[in-house]
Length: 224
Image 1 (cartoon, rainbow, N blue to C red):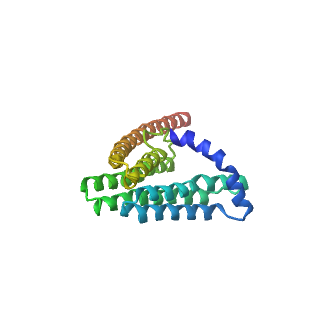
Image 2 (cartoon, rainbow, N blue to C red; image 1 turned 90 degrees about the horizontal axis):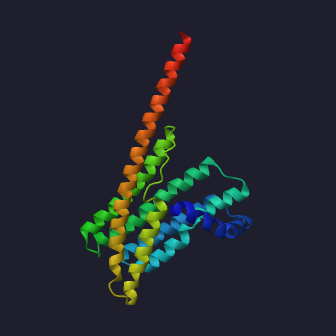
């Protein structure tokens, strides 16, 4: 849901910036690569040290590249299958870095094996949720379901909670509890979304197989 409405809003807001980058000769692929590198740096440098506030600031700055690169490609009329593939692939890399950074914190100075496992589950389930849609579409199914917690929701919930939790180092008491709560929400929501997509693919594949069988029966009947 956030992906549907927030993406349209920020796309309009970032359109002038995308146009500026094109005038400067920057390519959409370069923006994609730089954005992913920035997200990875913010997540894998700051999060394992417990610097959640500054890590979230860095990640947030670079995560908008996901909207800028596509905007640039459309404005320049150079949208391509390669660009879409690169963008989607590096999205998975960025997501893995964010939850991997959180898992490293809990495995180290955070000293919480349960939350480390929850962060790893968020990482893995997010990848599988994306895979189920891509795989379903690759075999010709529409996969007509969004699900409870998609990528936009996973990022917003996790990053907002991480950023606010980081205020603990500025003297805000008790606020660090927000991050574990957020990770549990993302973990449960991702599991629900995965089930929704698997059920949808199963239903759509059964309908497609039945339609193909019916068409084959009609074809054989006509031949007779």
